[in-house]
Amino acid sequence: MSLKGIKKIVVAIFISGFGKFLGFVREVLVAGMYGVSHVTDAFFASQQVFLIISNYVFGAFNMAFVPHYIKLKSKNSEKFFSGVIFLLLLGIGVLINGVLIFWINGYIKIFPVTDLLGDFVEIMSYSVVPTLIVGLAYAVFHAEGRHYLANFIGIAMTVGMLATLLFYWVLSAGEEKKDFLYALPFSYLIGTLLSFLLVFLVGRKYLAPNINLKNIDKSFIKSLSSSSVENVFFNINQSTTVYFAAIAGAGVVASNAYAMRVAMLPLGIISSQLGNIYQTWIGKKITLEERPSRKVFFAMCLPGVVIAIFMIVFGGEIIKLIYERGNFSKENTAQVVELLTPYAAYFVVMSINQLAARHFFALNKGAVYVRLMVFAYIFASLGKYIFSDNFINVLWVSVLFEGLVSLIMCAMIWRGR
Image (cartoon, rainbow, N blue to C red; front, top):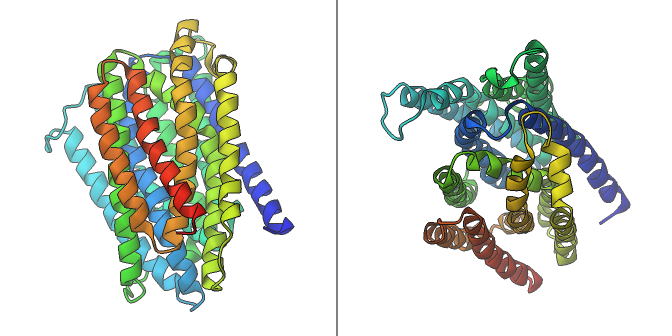
């Protein structure tokens, strides 16, 4: 990789890191205001619904969209493609929003919801359409090689969330912070809307509505279908973790969320940025009919291993520094630290799998990745049920099966398959 390419990686990581730092400040405020409580349990449980949507549009959709967009860009047809996708995502977003509103009002009986959980879901439901459009813009910017702008979208979302929480913090001066129950869902909604506003201001030329369907060919549909299948099983796997946390006792959902956010922080700062740049790089190599070097793939896997070791060694100090203040007690710290070690290992697994996904999808071999990951998710979910008597074992089961798949994919890439 050239010096210019390395410079782009460093700058992209710096920009993303700044956004994640602001996210860290937000986590500190959440912990200080609410600690581990029924409020954070309700928020993190309701947020899982919207994480499914954001995971899809920033993950599965992004993996299928970027290579196809790059291919069409060489034919000057990329804007017609993004315009059609814009309309499709807009319609899907409105539909999902409606389903959520009907669900929490009892017209659709899927899962029962408490009053607080229902209120949180209703507020956050209005973030669905903006999230889908922001996700599309994020993919377009990366496909265009404008990685900085894509990262600024994420920063705008974090700034909106943080500003809302700070407003509530100041407003509640002299009162119990935990009484301001709705700061959390409103911060999520406002952050999403701010990011959507940024997309409208700087990226609307890429998202002009278009009804020309000819650029949505079979290769894109096949790639999107493969990544979507994997994403469905991924979200089922993640949701089962939240479910077993919920039945493990009060506060475990929140403790799990706090530990996961610390462990997955470098996934957004470093691993995802490396993955996005790798995806653009390998896409261009394929377009130029050049053979991508496997050494680049493995070089981008190494930072994840180093970071995980650091988290395991200094886990206690990290959690105490970030969370232990206000309503977040020493007992809460101990609960979160206990979960950090398996999550650090899981971070390595997810970093490698994210990179491998981009590799296989760029080579039009997404079905290989999907089959392996679906196998891992199915067996992980079954294993969680068997070992659900101890929540830490639930986490290690995911590390075991998804880690096994990571090793298999690395072996395949090393052998040039």
